[in-house]
Amino acid sequence: MSDFEVIVNKYEKLVYTVCYRITANHSDALDATQEVFLQAYRHMGIWENDKALTGWLCRVANNKSIDLIRKRKPELSIDEQNDDESPNFQFQSDELTPERALTEAETRKELTEAINALPQEQ
Image (cartoon, rainbow, N blue to C red):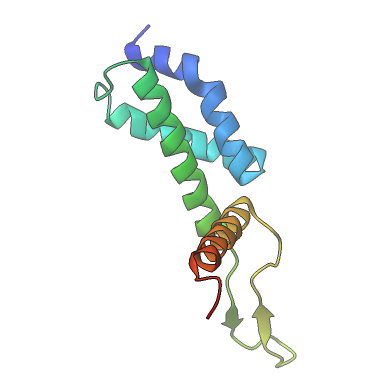
């Protein structure tokens, strides 16, 4: 068994779990997991120990999952006129995705810190 096969067998479940928690979709999580291990294969041997490898794989899984969400996110588009001559609009979803939840949480944290940094009386 090659070193790469050992890595895949040992970390596949962890990487899939990280991807699934972000994408919330089995198929997307599998796609992201595959991308993570492709990148791991390209970077074989850069890790000094299992702890470094585990952290690296989790970070790459996080990034690949977010990239996948961004690529599949519907955007506002105006397609050409359809048969009844009315425009076909597609609007961005208001669904709370993991990426959006994280962004909103970070924004709230930054606002709270900024407000707390203001002087008490002005």
